[in-house]
Length: 154
Image (cartoon, rainbow, N blue to C red; front, side):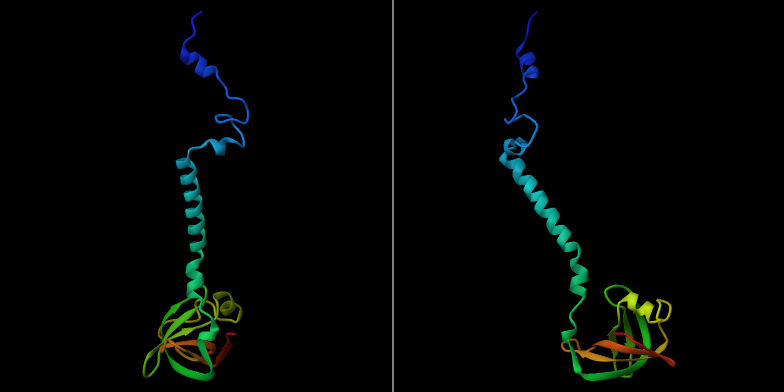
């Protein structure tokens, strides 16, 4: 019977705990390039996961940006409605300009009796709230009046 070098290599199994054996030491035996690529992949995936929640966080600005020392009372026609998280917003055409009114979150709107179908473009509403400190056409609504119905939003 004749053995070749290839037969000897195929039959060889490295002892446990050394490169080539399966187990916890396998990571240690990977090349620097393999380890770098694995770490880079893990870091990239972690960064992407962290950024996945960023749009909501960026869209949700703090209430301290609104001047609650002066209450605005704006009446007009609804131009558009965005019934999405983090807050429902409407564009409201008043006599002199178009306002972006930031209302309550969708779940609160529903629980207060204002489902998605309650606000429609073209309808007249009155909004009471606070002007944004740096956005001249934005206000945070405290209450909204539709006909005879007044809804507290906070």
